[in-house]
Length: 151
Figure 1: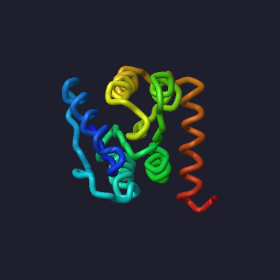
Figure 2: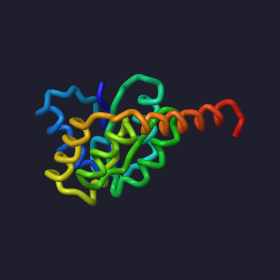
Figure 3: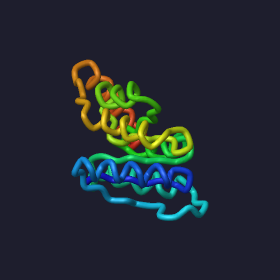
Figure 4: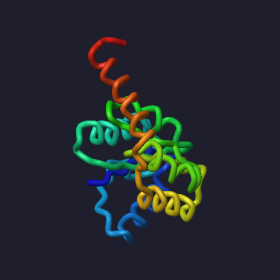
C-alpha cells in the first residue's frame, strides 16, 4: 500500500502526484486533506508516519507548503525515514543512500512536472545497502535506545 497526504499548501501538487502514481499503476490511498481549507500539517503527517511506522504501509508521500513541517512530523515515528526532496538528485539519494520510506515535497516550491519526475526517480532507484545499511542500523539503534529509556 502506498500512502499520500497533504495540508492545504500541498493539495494541488498532491492531486497531480496521485494522477502520476495512477499512470504508473501504483495503488495509492489518500489520507487527506481533500479541500483548500486551512488545516494543520501535523494531523496529516501523523497519519502517514504512523501507518509507515506500524507497517500498515511501506511507502508514502507527504506534501505541505515547503515540506519542512511534514518532514519534522513524519520523522518522529520509529522506523520512518522521511526525506525532504527538492530535485532529482535528492530524490535518488534519498532511496540509494537513506532508503527513505517517505518522501516529502513542498507544494509551493515545485511544479507538477518537476514533482512527478522526482517521484519517478525515487520509485525507480534502489537502496545500495553496504555502508549505507550500517548507518541505517545506527539510526535504528538510536530509536531503540529512546524507546527503552536508555536515552
